Amino acid sequence: MTKNYIDIIPAKGYILAYLKQDLIFEPYEVKHGKLCFKGSERLKCEQPSECHFFDRESDYRIVVRESRGDVREALMTEEEERYMDSDLLFIEEALIKEEYAQKEGFPKKLRVINRYRYSDNDTLVLYNYRISFV
Image 1 (cartoon, rainbow, N blue to C red):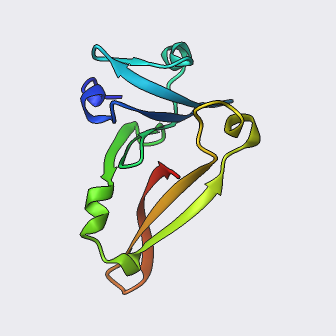
Image 2 (cartoon, one colour; image 1 turned 90 degrees about the vertical axis):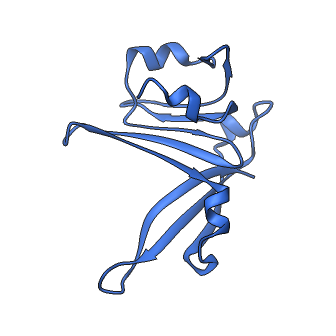
């Protein structure tokens, strides 16, 4: 993760991090320039292959591609989607696993906003997505 990600992520939201053998899904908050959440020690021990910091309006995603030896970062916002062709946005809602949904302060559903576009040969392709909560 880049060092300045703390300035890009929403000040308060949820972290969804995919580890090799586990998953971190918890509320987080940025306090005094530091990322604070219950499972933060686990991120110091193991780098996630993919990590999302999101709230209702934005999703900052970091993807570590070991096979290519690089890191991809992207910030997707609800504001961008206002200017996109609505026919190329597909919104779906997914139930959150019961073990998380029962916790206080957790949403019951996640919203995934899929962004499509046409390729050079006029094929409709998914090129990005944003996670939010309902």
